[in-house]
Length: 432
Image 1 (cartoon, rainbow, N blue to C red):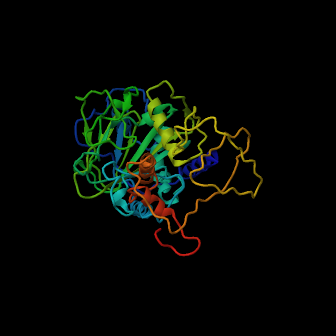
Image 2: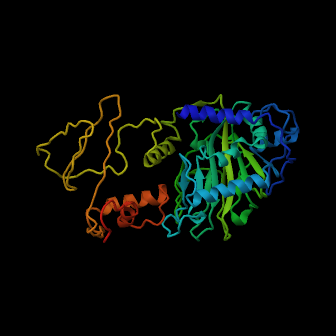
Image 3: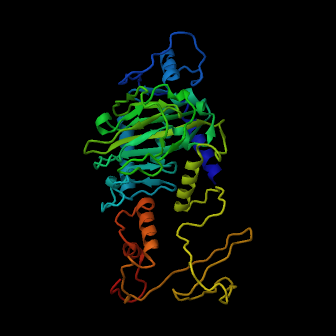
């Protein structure tokens, strides 16, 4: 299924390559010191022969690892992306496979579903409206200059950088995007990052370190920031802090293309508005996957796998042991107690008490074993506070999972979570 989806996305992208663009574009000036385009003859390493980039633009990317194209994406397209994002925030649209993220400072807020609780959505390949960004001919004609004609859309994001709460958590540490990608060669990968509004240092523009795309991939991990760091916001642990930096001031529709080894990040949003951008990482379909075990990328692989399990996605990833999320077990019981294995036929139903100790063995067949179940309770039951009891640990895990991964920002305790799922099926509702 995943291969079919990837193939379909590739056909969509390829189908747009030949379409002409009506948008006039120019190279963008940037703030800060940058390396001038080299005047001496050179062999191009980071760009491919094309009739889109001027010689000056091509040399600029070769030297600096990024290139800004002004006014590339239309206001109309950006408005459509904004409308779709707002639908997702209001839970009116729920694309399959979408990852919704919140800033660590607002993950525990009481906000109702809106853009105020979502700082980023990614993997929106199943959202037809947002994925249009990845197929825009004006984007792809530039992408082809870096990847060649066979193009894969690998990772798509819409970033909704929130106003900083004072803890500086809206920052993104300096990093190299290749840290997140287990495929090579890096020179055939490029990011297209489009401003959805005016972006400058006040609302947290991108900052890049020109020329750092020529460096190898460096070790990344969470920075030790006092206010906290967002999930998977890894940063470079060792870099030249005296290296020149360029802050990319951009207008709506401006798009920056940059190399996956370019060191970059973004500052905190010091305004009262939410700063939006939309992006996609593209790669040549001729790239190949690598095994990152034993490399500087091993830590991000581990974290991605853990998040994959929290989402419950059956991605075919290999796990070496481990326990499924929220599969808690009794820590102390009589291991010599008699056990009964329930052999059942289709339609057989077992009713059991909630204090009955039970579990299940591993499936040693090639098929998937299916059951359906429901826990029922009298509507005369009452809720209890589990804090300070042996149930406190599962309450904490359920609340964190509900907030961060399932969009239930209002969940504050186990009672909230259960109440949001309980439904009356017979009789009258009283305490519940």
